[in-house]
Structure formats: structure tokens, C-alpha cells
Length: 227
Image 1 (cartoon, rainbow, N blue to C red):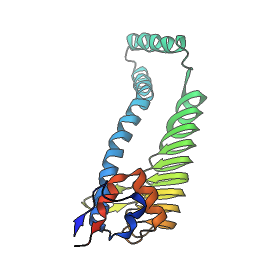
Image 2: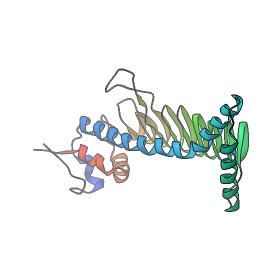
Image 3: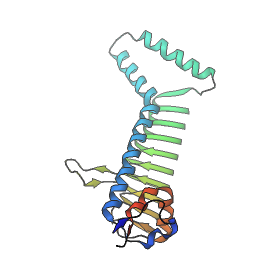
Image 4: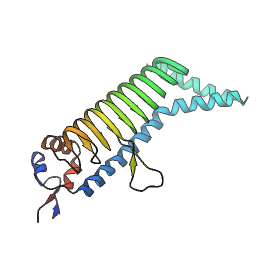
């Protein structure tokens, strides 16, 4: 049998061909690698002010002269305010249009625990668009361990000292993508997922296959032509 190329057949006909589970899971992991790169870079970029603030706070507590740093910080903040960027609220508990804190509340919130329209939490987050490492709740929710919402993604993580064993990665939503996806439309890496329409190594419901191969075209390569 040979693989089906992305353009060989129509998306709606893909489910009629046998699925190679190994190719399917390999393709899933490749998409995860791309996601990880984008996710890590994005978190570093948006967390840069938070990291800088923590460094400044630590240096201040240790009596290190940070006058030069503070001048640069305030100059940058003034420049942002001049061009219309909202004031950034900092602190253990912070709320504002943009808040960066241990517990952050705002339209854009970044912290260990974040709550806002757009929220990024190192542990947990809740928002319209929510990204949380441990758990995430939102209309669009992305998490490593668990995600709950309308469109949810939970990619899981490798088990320590294991090359191909993954843990966590459970998503619950209308459209769910995860190691174990539970939703109306579910794309699952393994066989433990559930859904009204499923696309996984075990199940290839036509509705789910059509939806997910339209979004992630490389999954078409997991279907093979009979010899």
C-alpha cells in the first residue's frame, strides 16, 4: 500500500481509505513540535515585562543599585503610553487593561494564574482566549495538561525517561484536539478519546476526518491506497 498525498483525493473522500495509525501519530507529533515552538516563543515574548519586573524586584531587595535599569524601564513605559499603549499593572495581585502578576486580572492578563479576555497562565488561565500550562478554560482554550472550552487543545507532555509515552493532554470541548480528546468533534492521538465524531487511530468518522484534514492537511498522508 502507498500513502495518499495531500492533493490526491478530495477531503470528503479521505475516510474511505485505510488509516496507518503509526503515520497518524507521527503526524500528530510533528504538529505538536511546531505548536511547541510557537507557544514557547510567544510566552517568552509576552512574559518579557514580567520577567524584567521580577529581576528588578529581586535586585532591589538585595540592595543592588538598579537606578539605570529603572530609568530605562520608565522611559520605555512612557514611550508605550505616548503611543496609546495602556498602563501595565504589576504586583502580587494586579488588575487593569494589561496586568502582569502572580494573580492577574485584565483584558490582557499574564501571570501564574491569569483571568481576562486574553489570558496566559503559567499554571492556570481563564478567558475568551486562554493559554495555560496546567489547565486552561476559555472559548478558545489551549493547555498542556487539560483544556476546557468550545475549541480546546491539550497536547500533553512526554513521560520522564520515556521516549514515546505521553501523559496528561486531555481536552474537553465542542471541537477538541488532544492526546485524549472529548468533544462533539474530537481529534485524538490515542484510542482513549471520545466524541460524537472522532478522528483517531481507532475511529475515522467522515465528519471528523473532513473537518480536521481540512485544517491539518498532513493528516491525509496517514491514509493509504490499497495495493
